[in-house]
Image (tube, rainbow, N blue to C red; front, side):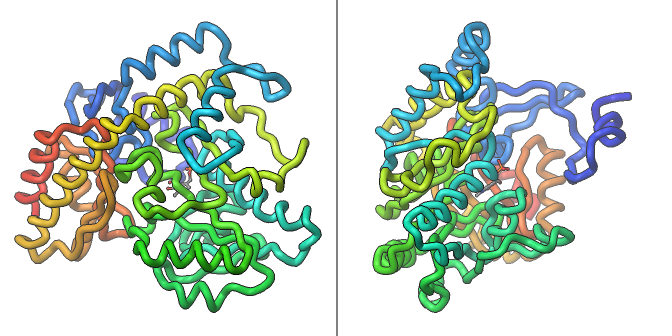
Length: 390
Ligand SMILES: Cc1ncc(COP(=O)(O)O)c(C=O)c1O
């Protein structure tokens, strides 16, 4: 039996996989079992942002794997300490909680927001407002937070105390704000919802409203953060700062790690014993992530992301002008979406045959989230393949 057959026979059939098994990755390229080479415009869903098997990340993993892999959070380790202090130095935050995935980082954020007010004796402040079309994960709390019904099917009853408003609609948010609200949670650029950036004026108004009402603001930057949008964190594009932010995906460039970052004030919601996870912040994952943050946060690295993002978007806009099947181009930096009239799946399959990996979201949106090191000549090749398909 080959890997495809074995997977289909023995792994839960929860993922609709493209019929390819990959055996090797290097930079922006992947190779399948037959030795065919592909240019990766998905990066494992915005995870391998430094490309596959980046030499510095690989070296950090090897170094740490041969020194100390896990010791538990009953003790201290230097890679965890260094990563936490680096994330705080580079962001608004004063404290970090380490998790293993995006959903788990969001769980921590939801729990922190509720406990922050419970601790102050404000027991009726528990409601979390999230956005329609949002995506926050697949655990019970995070699928409840997610603003898409299809994710919730079959899992009722959900958690109490969540409500949903249309994204980029400040009046709807104002209308939903009452004295039971503890937090507003949103993605500055919605990813799974169809690559939909927040309007700058909207994000500022959300911050002002939260300040007025004493409500915590949580940004889920699991997909749009870590340099993806051309600044280290997407909210820096908007000059709007949250109280709590979650990261995962590109933070480990492929090693599983998530993080919840908070201001000193918001962080007071947790005390000894209020939250924990066995694998959170292992020396192995944090050693890799420390290297990732060091590379991605360099100005020259972020400059080239912005420049290539601009270049890529211009080319997509030109396709929009030329082809009636294209309905819209959206996104920031190297998180871009091309909305087509129907059947994103056709393009995903046809591009794979031509040696490009992308994926389709919400049936009609082609998502491009290449490694941030992608070269312009690869962008040109993809655009020309798309042009001929359109
Ligand atoms: C914005 C956002 N939040 C949360 C998640 C969940 O992350 P994970 O799959 O690591 O649990 C995702 C995953 O796609 C995401 O895009």
